[in-house]
Length: 92
Image 1 (cartoon, rainbow, N blue to C red):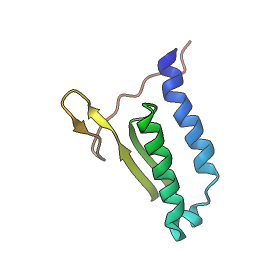
Image 2 (cartoon, rainbow, N blue to C red):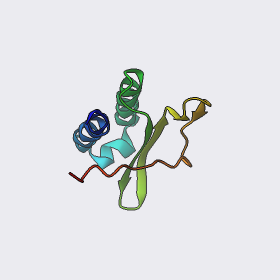
Image 3 (cartoon, rainbow, N blue to C red):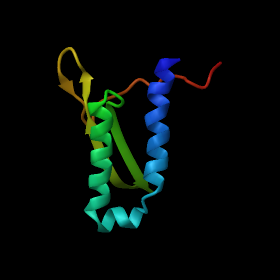
Image 4 (cartoon, rainbow, N blue to C red):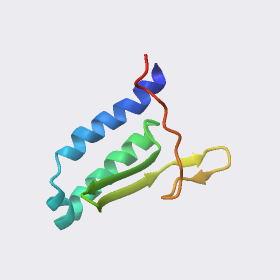
C-alpha cells in the first residue's frame, strides 16, 4: 500500500500543480518552468519522486524534465529514452 501512496501522491500533486499553470504562460514565461523544476527537485531531494515528466498541449511538448536514476546501483541516470514499468494500481 505504501508504494501506491508513493506513486499516487506525486502524481495527484502534479496534476493539481500543473493545472494551475496556463499553457500560454509556460510558453511566454520561463518562470513557470523554473517553478516546476524546483517542485520536482524538492520531491527528489525528499525521496518522493524519480522519473520523467512531460506536459503536452495537443501534440506539442510544453514541459519536459527528468530527475533521478533509472538504475540506482549502477548509477545510470534517467533520460528521455528510459523505459519505466507501470504497475497496475486499479485492481483490488
